[in-house]
Amino acid sequence: MRDFSADHRWLSINTATLRGAGKLDAIIEACARHDIRAISPWRDQVAAIGLERTAALVREHGLALSGYCRGGMFPAVDAAGRQAALDDNRRAVDEAKLLDAACLVLVVGGLPGALVGAALTRDIAGAREQVRDGIAATLDYAREVGMPLAIEPLHPMYAADRACINTLEQALDVCDALDPQRSGALGVAVDVYHVWWDPKLEAQIARAGKARLLAFHVCDWLAKTRDLLEDRGMMGDGVIEIAKIRAWVEAAGFAGYSEVEIFSSLDWWKRPVDEVLATCIARHRSAV
Amino acid sequence: MRDFSADHRWLSINTATLRGAGKLDAIIEACARHDIRAISPWRDQVAAIGLERTAALVREHGLALSGYCRGGMFPAVDAAGRQAALDDNRRAVDEAKLLDAACLVLVVGGLPGALVGAALTRDIAGAREQVRDGIAATLDYAREVGMPLAIEPLHPMYAADRACINTLEQALDVCDALDPQRSGALGVAVDVYHVWWDPKLEAQIARAGKARLLAFHVCDWLAKTRDLLEDRGMMGDGVIEIAKIRAWVEAAGFAGYSEVEIFSSLDWWKRPVDEVLATCIARHRSAV
Image (cartoon, rainbow over all chains, first blue to last red; front, top):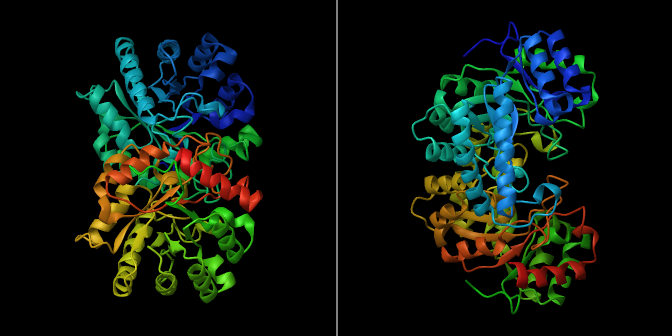
Protein backbone atom coordinates (compact mmCIF):
# COMPACT_ATOMS: atom_id res chain seq x y z
CA MET A 1 0.00 0.00 0.00
CA ARG A 2 1.35 3.36 -0.99
CA ASP A 3 2.34 5.80 1.73
CA PHE A 4 0.25 8.95 1.36
CA SER A 5 1.48 10.60 4.56
CA ALA A 6 4.35 12.58 3.08
CA ASP A 7 2.83 14.23 0.03
CA HIS A 8 -0.32 14.48 -2.06
CA ARG A 9 0.92 13.32 -5.41
CA TRP A 10 -1.91 10.75 -5.65
CA LEU A 11 -4.66 13.16 -4.66
CA SER A 12 -7.21 14.10 -7.30
CA ILE A 13 -9.96 16.65 -6.80
CA ASN A 14 -13.37 15.89 -8.19
CA THR A 15 -14.53 19.37 -9.03
CA ALA A 16 -17.98 18.79 -7.51
CA THR A 17 -16.13 19.13 -4.19
CA LEU A 18 -15.64 22.81 -5.01
CA ARG A 19 -19.14 23.66 -6.22
CA GLY A 20 -19.12 26.64 -3.91
CA ALA A 21 -15.95 28.05 -5.49
CA GLY A 22 -17.25 29.45 -8.75
CA LYS A 23 -16.60 28.35 -12.28
CA LEU A 24 -14.28 25.62 -13.45
CA ASP A 25 -11.49 27.99 -14.49
CA ALA A 26 -11.35 29.37 -10.96
CA ILE A 27 -11.46 25.84 -9.57
CA ILE A 28 -8.58 24.71 -11.79
CA GLU A 29 -6.49 27.75 -10.80
CA ALA A 30 -7.14 26.95 -7.13
CA CYS A 31 -6.08 23.33 -7.61
CA ALA A 32 -2.91 24.47 -9.37
CA ARG A 33 -2.13 26.82 -6.44
CA HIS A 34 -2.22 23.79 -4.15
CA ASP A 35 0.03 21.67 -6.39
CA ILE A 36 -2.74 19.24 -7.16
CA ARG A 37 -1.82 17.04 -10.11
CA ALA A 38 -5.21 15.64 -11.09
CA ILE A 39 -8.86 16.58 -11.24
CA SER A 40 -12.12 14.98 -12.31
CA PRO A 41 -14.48 17.59 -13.75
CA TRP A 42 -18.24 17.48 -14.27
CA ARG A 43 -19.75 18.04 -17.67
CA ASP A 44 -21.95 20.95 -16.60
CA GLN A 45 -18.90 22.73 -15.18
CA VAL A 46 -16.97 22.08 -18.40
CA ALA A 47 -19.88 23.26 -20.54
CA ALA A 48 -20.12 26.49 -18.56
CA ILE A 49 -16.62 27.59 -19.61
CA GLY A 50 -16.38 25.58 -22.83
CA LEU A 51 -14.67 22.32 -23.69
CA GLU A 52 -11.76 23.91 -25.56
CA ARG A 53 -11.05 26.36 -22.76
CA THR A 54 -11.13 23.48 -20.27
CA ALA A 55 -8.70 21.50 -22.40
CA ALA A 56 -6.37 24.49 -22.65
CA LEU A 57 -6.41 25.03 -18.87
CA VAL A 58 -5.80 21.35 -18.21
CA ARG A 59 -2.80 21.40 -20.60
CA GLU A 60 -1.47 24.68 -19.23
CA HIS A 61 -1.37 23.29 -15.68
CA GLY A 62 -0.23 19.82 -16.68
CA LEU A 63 -3.24 18.26 -14.98
CA ALA A 64 -4.23 14.63 -15.31
CA LEU A 65 -7.92 13.69 -15.35
CA SER A 66 -8.58 10.77 -13.01
CA GLY A 67 -12.04 10.59 -14.57
CA TYR A 68 -14.77 12.54 -16.27
CA CYS A 69 -18.23 12.92 -14.69
CA ARG A 70 -20.45 11.67 -16.02
CA GLY A 71 -22.22 9.49 -18.54
CA GLY A 72 -25.13 7.17 -17.82
CA MET A 73 -28.74 8.04 -17.02
CA PHE A 74 -29.86 5.43 -19.55
CA PRO A 75 -33.45 4.48 -18.62
CA ALA A 76 -36.28 6.34 -20.29
CA VAL A 77 -39.96 5.66 -20.87
CA ASP A 78 -39.77 5.55 -24.65
CA ALA A 79 -37.42 4.82 -27.53
CA ALA A 80 -36.79 8.49 -28.22
CA GLY A 81 -35.68 9.03 -24.65
CA ARG A 82 -33.38 6.01 -24.76
CA GLN A 83 -31.85 7.20 -28.03
CA ALA A 84 -31.31 10.68 -26.62
CA ALA A 85 -29.45 9.11 -23.69
CA LEU A 86 -27.26 7.07 -26.04
CA ASP A 87 -26.48 10.16 -28.12
CA ASP A 88 -25.58 12.09 -25.00
CA ASN A 89 -23.31 9.29 -23.83
CA ARG A 90 -21.45 9.35 -27.16
CA ARG A 91 -20.85 13.06 -26.66
CA ALA A 92 -19.63 12.36 -23.13
CA VAL A 93 -17.20 9.76 -24.47
CA ASP A 94 -15.89 12.26 -27.02
CA GLU A 95 -15.45 14.96 -24.39
CA ALA A 96 -13.66 12.56 -22.06
CA LYS A 97 -11.34 11.58 -24.92
CA LEU A 98 -10.60 15.16 -25.87
CA LEU A 99 -9.68 15.87 -22.24
CA ASP A 100 -7.65 12.63 -22.05
CA ALA A 101 -9.54 11.38 -19.00
CA ALA A 102 -8.62 8.04 -17.46
CA CYS A 103 -12.25 6.94 -17.73
CA LEU A 104 -15.80 8.12 -18.21
CA VAL A 105 -17.73 7.54 -15.00
CA LEU A 106 -21.25 6.15 -15.48
CA VAL A 107 -24.04 7.01 -13.07
CA VAL A 108 -26.42 4.68 -14.77
CA GLY A 109 -29.81 6.16 -13.93
CA GLY A 110 -32.82 4.88 -12.01
CA LEU A 111 -36.56 4.97 -12.58
CA PRO A 112 -37.47 7.47 -15.31
CA GLY A 113 -38.91 10.62 -13.76
CA ALA A 114 -37.80 9.83 -10.22
CA LEU A 115 -34.99 12.38 -10.30
CA VAL A 116 -37.59 15.14 -10.47
CA GLY A 117 -39.74 13.43 -7.85
CA ALA A 118 -42.31 11.87 -10.16
CA ALA A 119 -41.36 8.33 -11.11
CA LEU A 120 -43.17 7.27 -14.29
CA THR A 121 -42.72 3.56 -13.53
CA ARG A 122 -41.82 1.30 -10.62
CA ASP A 123 -40.20 -1.29 -12.86
CA ILE A 124 -36.66 -1.42 -11.46
CA ALA A 125 -35.89 -4.72 -13.19
CA GLY A 126 -36.83 -3.08 -16.48
CA ALA A 127 -34.64 -0.08 -15.66
CA ARG A 128 -31.78 -2.46 -15.00
CA GLU A 129 -32.26 -4.10 -18.39
CA GLN A 130 -32.21 -0.69 -20.03
CA VAL A 131 -29.03 0.16 -18.18
CA ARG A 132 -27.31 -3.00 -19.37
CA ASP A 133 -28.40 -2.32 -22.95
CA GLY A 134 -27.33 1.31 -22.72
CA ILE A 135 -23.90 0.41 -21.39
CA ALA A 136 -23.51 -2.23 -24.10
CA ALA A 137 -24.31 0.30 -26.84
CA THR A 138 -22.05 2.95 -25.35
CA LEU A 139 -19.27 0.43 -24.86
CA ASP A 140 -19.19 -0.34 -28.58
CA TYR A 141 -18.45 3.29 -29.29
CA ALA A 142 -16.13 3.80 -26.33
CA ARG A 143 -14.01 0.85 -27.45
CA GLU A 144 -13.57 2.42 -30.89
CA VAL A 145 -12.53 5.71 -29.36
CA GLY A 146 -10.42 4.13 -26.66
CA MET A 147 -12.21 5.53 -23.60
CA PRO A 148 -12.71 3.15 -20.65
CA LEU A 149 -16.16 3.20 -19.05
CA ALA A 150 -16.35 3.03 -15.26
CA ILE A 151 -19.70 1.91 -13.82
CA GLU A 152 -20.18 3.56 -10.45
CA PRO A 153 -22.41 1.54 -8.16
CA LEU A 154 -24.34 4.08 -6.14
CA HIS A 155 -25.56 3.72 -2.57
CA PRO A 156 -28.92 1.93 -2.41
CA MET A 157 -30.57 5.14 -1.19
CA TYR A 158 -30.18 6.41 -4.78
CA ALA A 159 -31.71 3.32 -6.43
CA ALA A 160 -34.91 5.14 -7.36
CA ASP A 161 -33.61 8.41 -8.73
CA ARG A 162 -29.94 8.16 -9.69
CA ALA A 163 -28.62 4.66 -10.25
CA CYS A 164 -30.20 1.22 -10.13
CA ILE A 165 -26.75 -0.41 -9.95
CA ASN A 166 -26.25 -0.44 -6.21
CA THR A 167 -23.54 -2.89 -5.26
CA LEU A 168 -20.08 -3.63 -6.56
CA GLU A 169 -21.15 -7.22 -7.14
CA GLN A 170 -23.99 -6.07 -9.38
CA ALA A 171 -21.69 -3.71 -11.33
CA LEU A 172 -19.15 -6.49 -11.82
CA ASP A 173 -21.87 -8.85 -13.04
CA VAL A 174 -22.62 -6.30 -15.77
CA CYS A 175 -18.91 -5.99 -16.55
CA ASP A 176 -18.56 -9.77 -16.82
CA ALA A 177 -21.58 -9.99 -19.12
CA LEU A 178 -20.45 -7.21 -21.47
CA ASP A 179 -16.67 -7.54 -21.32
CA PRO A 180 -15.91 -11.15 -20.36
CA GLN A 181 -12.39 -10.83 -21.73
CA ARG A 182 -11.59 -8.17 -19.07
CA SER A 183 -10.17 -5.97 -21.79
CA GLY A 184 -9.88 -2.82 -19.70
CA ALA A 185 -12.64 -1.13 -21.71
CA LEU A 186 -15.23 -1.59 -18.95
CA GLY A 187 -14.78 -1.47 -15.20
CA VAL A 188 -15.96 0.21 -12.04
CA ALA A 189 -15.51 3.37 -10.03
CA VAL A 190 -15.32 2.45 -6.35
CA ASP A 191 -16.56 5.32 -4.19
CA VAL A 192 -16.23 4.55 -0.50
CA TYR A 193 -19.39 6.55 0.25
CA HIS A 194 -21.49 4.19 -1.84
CA VAL A 195 -19.97 0.85 -0.91
CA TRP A 196 -18.45 1.10 2.58
CA TRP A 197 -21.41 -0.68 4.24
CA ASP A 198 -21.28 -3.74 1.95
CA PRO A 199 -20.38 -6.95 3.79
CA LYS A 200 -19.09 -8.37 0.50
CA LEU A 201 -16.91 -5.37 -0.34
CA GLU A 202 -13.48 -6.89 0.23
CA ALA A 203 -14.32 -10.00 -1.79
CA GLN A 204 -15.83 -8.01 -4.65
CA ILE A 205 -12.84 -5.65 -4.83
CA ALA A 206 -10.60 -8.70 -5.13
CA ARG A 207 -12.91 -10.05 -7.83
CA ALA A 208 -12.71 -6.75 -9.72
CA GLY A 209 -8.93 -6.84 -9.90
CA LYS A 210 -6.66 -4.39 -11.64
CA ALA A 211 -8.44 -4.72 -14.99
CA ARG A 212 -11.77 -3.51 -13.59
CA LEU A 213 -10.69 -0.97 -10.96
CA LEU A 214 -10.72 2.24 -12.98
CA ALA A 215 -11.32 4.86 -10.28
CA PHE A 216 -11.28 5.23 -6.50
CA HIS A 217 -13.30 8.00 -4.85
CA VAL A 218 -13.10 9.10 -1.24
CA CYS A 219 -15.09 11.20 1.21
CA ASP A 220 -16.76 10.07 4.44
CA TRP A 221 -20.11 8.96 5.83
CA LEU A 222 -21.18 11.17 8.74
CA ALA A 223 -22.84 9.26 11.57
CA LYS A 224 -25.53 11.93 11.68
CA THR A 225 -26.16 12.41 7.97
CA ARG A 226 -28.71 15.21 7.50
CA ASP A 227 -29.39 15.02 3.78
CA LEU A 228 -29.49 12.09 1.38
CA LEU A 229 -27.45 13.85 -1.30
CA GLU A 230 -25.47 16.83 -0.07
CA ASP A 231 -24.14 15.98 3.38
CA ARG A 232 -21.05 13.94 2.62
CA GLY A 233 -18.21 14.28 5.07
CA MET A 234 -14.54 15.15 4.74
CA MET A 235 -12.26 12.13 5.03
CA GLY A 236 -11.67 11.45 8.72
CA ASP A 237 -14.87 13.11 9.92
CA GLY A 238 -17.06 10.04 9.50
CA VAL A 239 -17.19 6.31 10.03
CA ILE A 240 -15.69 4.84 6.87
CA GLU A 241 -12.49 2.81 7.18
CA ILE A 242 -11.01 4.58 4.16
CA ALA A 243 -7.45 3.35 4.52
CA LYS A 244 -8.63 -0.24 4.88
CA ILE A 245 -10.64 0.00 1.68
CA ARG A 246 -7.72 1.68 -0.11
CA ALA A 247 -5.53 -1.21 1.01
CA TRP A 248 -8.01 -3.62 -0.59
CA VAL A 249 -8.11 -1.78 -3.92
CA GLU A 250 -4.33 -1.48 -4.01
CA ALA A 251 -3.90 -5.14 -3.12
CA ALA A 252 -6.11 -5.86 -6.14
CA GLY A 253 -3.77 -3.83 -8.34
CA PHE A 254 -5.17 -0.32 -8.40
CA ALA A 255 -2.40 2.29 -8.52
CA GLY A 256 -4.23 5.46 -9.58
CA TYR A 257 -5.45 8.59 -7.84
CA SER A 258 -7.57 8.89 -4.73
CA GLU A 259 -10.24 11.25 -5.97
CA VAL A 260 -11.96 13.43 -3.39
CA GLU A 261 -15.64 13.87 -4.18
CA ILE A 262 -17.65 15.66 -1.50
CA PHE A 263 -21.20 16.84 -2.14
CA SER A 264 -21.83 19.15 0.78
CA SER A 265 -24.14 22.10 0.39
CA LEU A 266 -24.58 21.93 4.16
CA ASP A 267 -20.92 22.49 4.98
CA TRP A 268 -17.93 22.35 2.61
CA TRP A 269 -19.49 24.20 -0.32
CA LYS A 270 -19.94 27.17 2.00
CA ARG A 271 -16.24 27.38 2.91
CA PRO A 272 -13.42 29.25 1.13
CA VAL A 273 -11.87 27.18 -1.65
CA ASP A 274 -8.37 27.37 -0.16
CA GLU A 275 -9.62 26.05 3.17
CA VAL A 276 -11.38 23.17 1.42
CA LEU A 277 -8.31 22.25 -0.62
CA ALA A 278 -5.92 22.57 2.32
CA THR A 279 -8.21 20.27 4.31
CA CYS A 280 -8.45 17.76 1.45
CA ILE A 281 -4.65 17.66 1.27
CA ALA A 282 -4.22 17.27 5.03
CA ARG A 283 -6.83 14.53 5.25
CA HIS A 284 -5.46 12.79 2.17
CA ARG A 285 -2.23 12.44 4.13
CA SER A 286 -3.79 11.48 7.46
CA ALA A 287 -7.09 9.71 6.76
CA VAL A 288 -6.86 8.13 3.30
CA MET B 1 -51.06 -15.08 -3.77
CA ARG B 2 -53.78 -14.05 -1.38
CA ASP B 3 -56.36 -11.52 -2.56
CA PHE B 4 -56.23 -8.49 -0.25
CA SER B 5 -58.64 -6.37 -2.27
CA ALA B 6 -61.85 -7.33 -0.50
CA ASP B 7 -60.95 -6.99 3.18
CA HIS B 8 -58.12 -6.25 5.58
CA ARG B 9 -57.98 -9.43 7.60
CA TRP B 10 -54.23 -9.78 6.90
CA LEU B 11 -53.38 -6.20 7.80
CA SER B 12 -51.32 -5.58 10.92
CA ILE B 13 -50.47 -2.15 12.27
CA ASN B 14 -47.00 -1.56 13.60
CA THR B 15 -47.75 0.94 16.32
CA ALA B 16 -44.82 3.16 15.29
CA THR B 17 -47.08 4.13 12.39
CA LEU B 18 -49.30 5.91 14.91
CA ARG B 19 -46.64 7.71 16.94
CA GLY B 20 -48.63 10.88 16.54
CA ALA B 21 -51.75 9.33 18.09
CA GLY B 22 -50.86 9.27 21.74
CA LYS B 23 -50.24 6.33 24.04
CA LEU B 24 -50.54 2.67 23.23
CA ASP B 25 -53.93 2.26 24.87
CA ALA B 26 -55.37 4.95 22.59
CA ILE B 27 -53.64 3.34 19.62
CA ILE B 28 -55.07 -0.09 20.44
CA GLU B 29 -58.57 1.37 20.84
CA ALA B 30 -58.22 3.07 17.44
CA CYS B 31 -57.09 -0.17 15.79
CA ALA B 32 -60.05 -1.99 17.33
CA ARG B 33 -62.42 0.67 15.98
CA HIS B 34 -61.14 -0.10 12.50
CA ASP B 35 -61.51 -3.88 12.89
CA ILE B 36 -57.80 -4.44 12.74
CA ARG B 37 -56.90 -7.93 13.92
CA ALA B 38 -53.17 -7.57 14.57
CA ILE B 39 -50.61 -5.08 15.78
CA SER B 40 -46.89 -4.98 16.39
CA PRO B 41 -46.06 -2.74 19.33
CA TRP B 42 -42.79 -1.08 20.33
CA ARG B 43 -41.25 -1.67 23.72
CA ASP B 44 -41.17 2.00 24.69
CA GLN B 45 -44.89 2.30 23.94
CA VAL B 46 -45.59 -0.82 25.99
CA ALA B 47 -43.45 0.40 28.86
CA ALA B 48 -45.29 3.72 28.91
CA ILE B 49 -48.62 2.05 29.80
CA GLY B 50 -47.22 -1.09 31.40
CA LEU B 51 -46.75 -4.64 30.17
CA GLU B 52 -49.72 -6.07 32.10
CA ARG B 53 -52.06 -3.36 30.90
CA THR B 54 -50.89 -3.95 27.33
CA ALA B 55 -51.49 -7.68 27.67
CA ALA B 56 -54.97 -7.03 29.06
CA LEU B 57 -55.87 -4.71 26.17
CA VAL B 58 -54.54 -7.15 23.62
CA ARG B 59 -56.65 -9.94 25.15
CA GLU B 60 -59.71 -7.74 25.49
CA HIS B 61 -59.67 -6.87 21.77
CA GLY B 62 -58.59 -10.32 20.61
CA LEU B 63 -55.55 -8.89 18.88
CA ALA B 64 -52.76 -10.97 17.44
CA LEU B 65 -49.19 -9.66 17.57
CA SER B 66 -47.45 -10.04 14.21
CA GLY B 67 -44.23 -9.13 15.97
CA TYR B 68 -42.71 -7.28 18.87
CA CYS B 69 -40.32 -4.36 18.33
CA ARG B 70 -37.59 -4.73 19.16
CA GLY B 71 -34.53 -6.54 20.41
CA GLY B 72 -31.03 -6.17 19.08
CA MET B 73 -28.59 -3.26 19.44
CA PHE B 74 -25.88 -5.72 20.40
CA PRO B 75 -22.54 -3.97 19.71
CA ALA B 76 -20.88 -2.12 22.56
CA VAL B 77 -17.38 -0.92 23.29
CA ASP B 78 -16.85 -3.06 26.36
CA ALA B 79 -17.93 -6.29 28.01
CA ALA B 80 -20.28 -4.52 30.40
CA GLY B 81 -22.08 -2.89 27.48
CA ARG B 82 -22.36 -6.19 25.66
CA GLN B 83 -23.75 -7.90 28.77
CA ALA B 84 -26.27 -5.12 29.29
CA ALA B 85 -27.46 -5.63 25.72
CA LEU B 86 -27.82 -9.38 26.27
CA ASP B 87 -29.75 -8.81 29.49
CA ASP B 88 -32.04 -6.37 27.74
CA ASN B 89 -32.65 -8.85 24.93
CA ARG B 90 -33.67 -11.52 27.44
CA ARG B 91 -36.22 -9.10 28.86
CA ALA B 92 -37.46 -8.37 25.34
CA VAL B 93 -37.87 -12.10 24.72
CA ASP B 94 -39.85 -12.44 27.93
CA GLU B 95 -42.10 -9.51 27.06
CA ALA B 96 -42.70 -10.86 23.56
CA LYS B 97 -43.62 -14.22 25.06
CA LEU B 98 -45.98 -12.73 27.60
CA LEU B 99 -47.73 -10.84 24.78
CA ASP B 100 -47.72 -13.99 22.61
CA ALA B 101 -45.99 -12.23 19.71
CA ALA B 102 -45.27 -14.16 16.53
CA CYS B 103 -41.62 -13.11 16.78
CA LEU B 104 -39.21 -10.69 18.38
CA VAL B 105 -37.83 -8.38 15.69
CA LEU B 106 -34.09 -7.71 15.96
CA VAL B 107 -32.62 -4.40 14.83
CA VAL B 108 -29.12 -5.57 15.44
CA GLY B 109 -27.24 -2.34 16.06
CA GLY B 110 -24.35 -0.60 14.28
CA LEU B 111 -21.20 1.14 15.43
CA PRO B 112 -21.34 1.86 19.17
CA GLY B 113 -22.05 5.55 19.74
CA ALA B 114 -23.15 6.28 16.18
CA LEU B 115 -26.82 6.45 17.09
CA VAL B 116 -26.10 9.57 19.11
CA GLY B 117 -23.82 10.94 16.39
CA ALA B 118 -20.48 10.06 17.96
CA ALA B 119 -19.23 6.69 16.73
CA LEU B 120 -16.66 5.27 19.14
CA THR B 121 -15.18 2.95 16.51
CA ARG B 122 -15.22 2.49 12.74
CA ASP B 123 -14.82 -1.29 13.01
CA ILE B 124 -17.92 -2.51 11.18
CA ALA B 125 -16.52 -6.02 10.79
CA GLY B 126 -16.07 -6.13 14.55
CA ALA B 127 -19.61 -4.86 15.06
CA ARG B 128 -20.86 -7.64 12.80
CA GLU B 129 -19.02 -10.23 14.88
CA GLN B 130 -20.59 -8.83 18.02
CA VAL B 131 -23.99 -8.99 16.38
CA ARG B 132 -23.55 -12.64 15.46
CA ASP B 133 -22.40 -13.47 19.00
CA GLY B 134 -25.26 -11.47 20.50
CA ILE B 135 -27.87 -13.22 18.37
CA ALA B 136 -26.33 -16.60 19.22
CA ALA B 137 -26.56 -15.91 22.94
CA THR B 138 -30.09 -14.55 22.70
CA LEU B 139 -31.15 -17.47 20.54
CA ASP B 140 -30.18 -19.96 23.23
CA TYR B 141 -32.60 -18.27 25.59
CA ALA B 142 -35.29 -17.63 22.98
CA ARG B 143 -35.31 -21.33 22.06
CA GLU B 144 -35.93 -22.28 25.70
CA VAL B 145 -38.79 -19.83 25.95
CA GLY B 146 -40.16 -20.62 22.50
CA MET B 147 -39.94 -17.14 20.97
CA PRO B 148 -38.73 -16.93 17.35
CA LEU B 149 -36.15 -14.23 16.59
CA ALA B 150 -36.52 -12.27 13.35
CA ILE B 151 -33.39 -10.50 12.12
CA GLU B 152 -34.43 -7.38 10.21
CA PRO B 153 -31.88 -6.37 7.61
CA LEU B 154 -31.95 -2.58 7.55
CA HIS B 155 -31.34 -0.34 4.56
CA PRO B 156 -27.61 0.33 4.06
CA MET B 157 -28.16 3.99 4.98
CA TYR B 158 -28.56 2.75 8.58
CA ALA B 159 -25.38 0.66 8.61
CA ALA B 160 -23.54 3.09 10.87
CA ASP B 161 -26.11 3.87 13.50
CA ARG B 162 -28.88 1.25 13.57
CA ALA B 163 -28.02 -2.07 11.99
CA CYS B 164 -24.91 -3.48 10.37
CA ILE B 165 -26.94 -6.31 8.81
CA ASN B 166 -27.94 -4.64 5.58
CA THR B 167 -29.07 -7.24 3.06
CA LEU B 168 -31.34 -10.23 3.20
CA GLU B 169 -28.44 -12.37 2.00
CA GLN B 170 -26.32 -11.26 4.95
CA ALA B 171 -29.16 -11.91 7.41
CA LEU B 172 -29.73 -15.38 5.99
CA ASP B 173 -26.02 -16.15 6.21
CA VAL B 174 -26.29 -15.47 9.95
CA CYS B 175 -29.40 -17.64 10.17
CA ASP B 176 -27.66 -20.49 8.37
CA ALA B 177 -24.65 -20.22 10.67
CA LEU B 178 -26.67 -20.19 13.91
CA ASP B 179 -29.65 -22.34 12.99
CA PRO B 180 -28.54 -24.66 10.21
CA GLN B 181 -31.41 -27.02 10.94
CA ARG B 182 -33.92 -24.28 9.94
CA SER B 183 -35.80 -24.98 13.14
CA GLY B 184 -38.06 -21.93 12.97
CA ALA B 185 -36.35 -20.38 15.98
CA LEU B 186 -34.40 -17.89 13.86
CA GLY B 187 -35.47 -16.09 10.71
CA VAL B 188 -35.90 -12.70 9.12
CA ALA B 189 -38.28 -9.78 9.00
CA VAL B 190 -38.55 -8.59 5.40
CA ASP B 191 -39.41 -4.89 5.29
CA VAL B 192 -39.89 -3.67 1.73
CA TYR B 193 -38.44 -0.26 2.66
CA HIS B 194 -35.09 -1.79 3.52
CA VAL B 195 -34.74 -4.36 0.76
CA TRP B 196 -36.70 -3.19 -2.29
CA TRP B 197 -33.56 -1.95 -4.10
CA ASP B 198 -31.68 -5.25 -3.78
CA PRO B 199 -31.04 -6.93 -7.16
CA LYS B 200 -30.81 -10.27 -5.34
CA LEU B 201 -34.07 -9.85 -3.44
CA GLU B 202 -36.21 -12.40 -5.27
CA ALA B 203 -33.54 -15.08 -5.05
CA GLN B 204 -32.87 -14.43 -1.37
CA ILE B 205 -36.58 -14.53 -0.49
CA ALA B 206 -36.76 -17.92 -2.19
CA ARG B 207 -33.68 -19.01 -0.25
CA ALA B 208 -35.29 -17.87 3.02
CA GLY B 209 -38.34 -20.03 2.50
CA LYS B 210 -41.23 -20.51 4.87
CA ALA B 211 -39.04 -21.52 7.78
CA ARG B 212 -37.14 -18.21 7.78
CA LEU B 213 -39.82 -15.71 6.73
CA LEU B 214 -41.16 -14.61 10.09
CA ALA B 215 -42.52 -11.14 9.30
CA PHE B 216 -43.36 -8.95 6.30
CA HIS B 217 -43.42 -5.16 6.70
CA VAL B 218 -44.77 -2.66 4.20
CA CYS B 219 -44.64 1.07 3.56
CA ASP B 220 -43.19 2.88 0.54
CA TRP B 221 -40.04 4.64 -0.66
CA LEU B 222 -40.81 8.20 -1.75
CA ALA B 223 -38.88 9.28 -4.85
CA LYS B 224 -38.09 12.55 -3.11
CA THR B 225 -37.20 11.27 0.35
CA ARG B 226 -36.48 14.26 2.61
CA ASP B 227 -35.20 12.56 5.74
CA LEU B 228 -33.17 9.41 6.26
CA LEU B 229 -35.36 8.10 9.08
CA GLU B 230 -38.78 9.70 9.27
CA ASP B 231 -40.01 10.21 5.72
CA ARG B 232 -41.37 6.81 4.79
CA GLY B 233 -44.30 6.80 2.44
CA MET B 234 -47.78 5.26 2.56
CA MET B 235 -48.13 2.19 0.37
CA GLY B 236 -48.84 3.33 -3.17
CA ASP B 237 -47.28 6.77 -2.81
CA GLY B 238 -43.74 5.66 -3.68
CA VAL B 239 -41.76 3.50 -6.05
CA ILE B 240 -41.70 0.08 -4.38
CA GLU B 241 -43.34 -2.82 -6.23
CA ILE B 242 -45.00 -3.99 -3.03
CA ALA B 243 -47.38 -6.53 -4.56
CA LYS B 244 -44.54 -8.10 -6.53
CA ILE B 245 -42.48 -8.53 -3.38
CA ARG B 246 -45.50 -9.89 -1.50
CA ALA B 247 -45.96 -12.40 -4.31
CA TRP B 248 -42.37 -13.52 -3.80
CA VAL B 249 -42.71 -13.98 -0.02
CA GLU B 250 -46.00 -15.83 -0.42
CA ALA B 251 -44.55 -18.05 -3.14
CA ALA B 252 -41.84 -18.92 -0.62
CA GLY B 253 -44.50 -19.95 1.89
CA PHE B 254 -45.18 -16.88 4.01
CA ALA B 255 -48.84 -16.68 5.01
CA GLY B 256 -48.84 -14.13 7.83
CA TYR B 257 -49.76 -10.50 8.21
CA SER B 258 -48.68 -7.55 6.11
CA GLU B 259 -47.52 -5.19 8.82
CA VAL B 260 -47.67 -1.48 8.06
CA GLU B 261 -44.70 0.36 9.56
CA ILE B 262 -44.43 4.01 8.58
CA PHE B 263 -41.99 6.36 10.31
CA SER B 264 -43.18 9.75 9.17
CA SER B 265 -42.77 12.75 11.41
CA LEU B 266 -42.93 14.82 8.22
CA ASP B 267 -46.41 13.68 7.23
CA TRP B 268 -48.43 10.78 8.65
CA TRP B 269 -47.62 11.31 12.33
CA LYS B 270 -49.22 14.74 11.99
CA ARG B 271 -52.55 13.41 10.74
CA PRO B 272 -55.59 12.23 12.75
CA VAL B 273 -55.33 8.58 13.75
CA ASP B 274 -58.58 7.62 12.02
CA GLU B 275 -57.38 9.12 8.73
CA VAL B 276 -54.11 7.23 9.00
CA LEU B 277 -55.83 3.93 9.72
CA ALA B 278 -58.48 4.40 7.03
CA THR B 279 -55.69 5.10 4.54
CA CYS B 280 -53.67 2.07 5.68
CA ILE B 281 -56.75 -0.11 5.15
CA ALA B 282 -57.54 1.36 1.72
CA ARG B 283 -53.94 1.02 0.55
CA HIS B 284 -53.65 -2.48 2.00
CA ARG B 285 -56.48 -3.40 -0.36
CA SER B 286 -55.22 -1.49 -3.41
CA ALA B 287 -51.42 -1.30 -3.18
CA VAL B 288 -50.20 -4.26 -1.13
